[in-house]
Length: 169
Image (cartoon, rainbow, N blue to C red; front, side):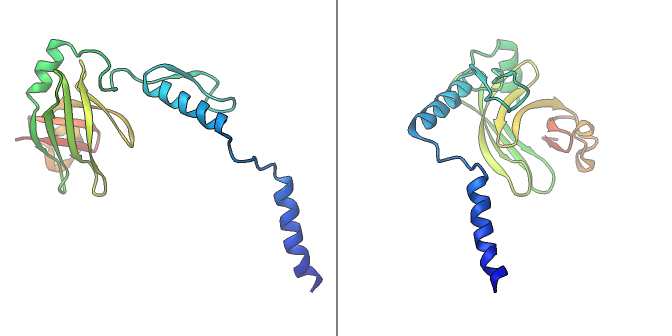
């Protein structure tokens, strides 16, 4: 019986010694919100001590919608991609022009479980966008470059990464 009584007491002692921090106060929350906003605005954000390698993190301006005007050549090329693209196993992509030249809406089913609408910007490499799994660029390729057997041999394709591509022909 004495052993059972010691377990809760031991657990309470360990919890008290664990150094668990208190809930953040309003000042901490405001500082974190300011850092997050700065990062979203493309500013340099210093990571707290112990995170990263002590270097500043910079948001990729090319991927951020509204980060300046895309050049005319990149916009003209990306405008040709407007429309529906098909991947494998029901994956698909619909590219639509957004309100500003060189800006696009990407409506994607990009995995069997994941879909969404993302804002993209024309760049020299393709259409840059950000989705929950990170910063991406939709690049012009052929079916072989998608890495997908079903798309092999196709000529008019867009690839996000090996194993994720969409074709029209």
